[in-house]
Length: 147
Image 1 (cartoon, rainbow, N blue to C red):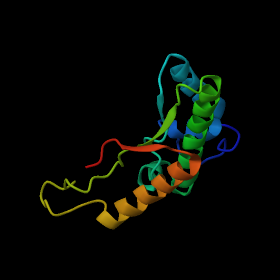
Image 2: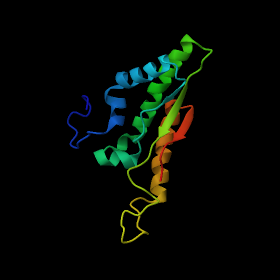
Image 3: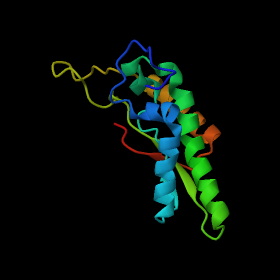
Image 4: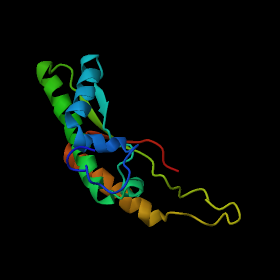
């Protein structure tokens, strides 16, 4: 939880993306370890950093910040490693993960037309995530699982 979220009233267990804000040195260290082992592409720690996914923890308002800092930490690690060997540039891959709601499958077996999220809500959520990733320094955007 870190100092900032020590009194958060909602259980944050499982919100691994929150480590970007509470333990940034750990997340950056993981990026550096991958880069030192030869990776040239680093994915951001933003798999669940949409407003929709963060709603489980009542942290929707942190979506932009999670994405921005998720990309920023990866950008710093990539830039530091590239500075050591400019012949091998490293790139930040902004991970656009799924939401915990689906726009293509009904949550109600009795009514296949029911959806628990609208297309417009998905667009808004992914747009905010993408803006944060790009503002934070992502070179590439990777859509992981969206359904």
